[in-house]
Image 1 (tube, rainbow, N blue to C red):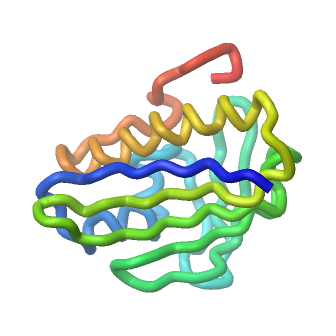
Image 2: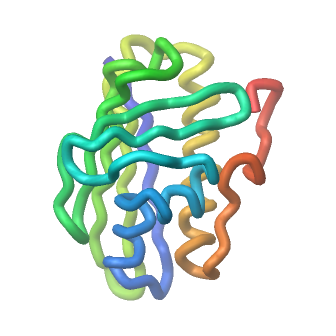
Length: 147
């Protein structure tokens, strides 16, 4: 198994504001995809829709202000059964976001694409919390013919 991992710092942000951006439907819609619906509490199903398709995730765990864990239950075949983990911590004037999309069965070209897309969306998250405006799909950075 292989994982996608990223680290980004959100400057001058409150830990609770970054947590809300990754743990609520409105927060997620502000930086990942505007077409986000569902239930963001543990056991809830989050539905994310994009131009090429959709992804459904079950919320497995949450620790307010610290972490969120999802499991992919529908979407691209490579994603099903993987988990998405968010770990947050305060370091000086930054809230550090440690992101992991874990459990890929193999390293394939689509994983490389997704790693780059996650990076662009993490920058959108940073932008949302720091400025009040993110760049969620469909206004996201298109990196290739796969979007």
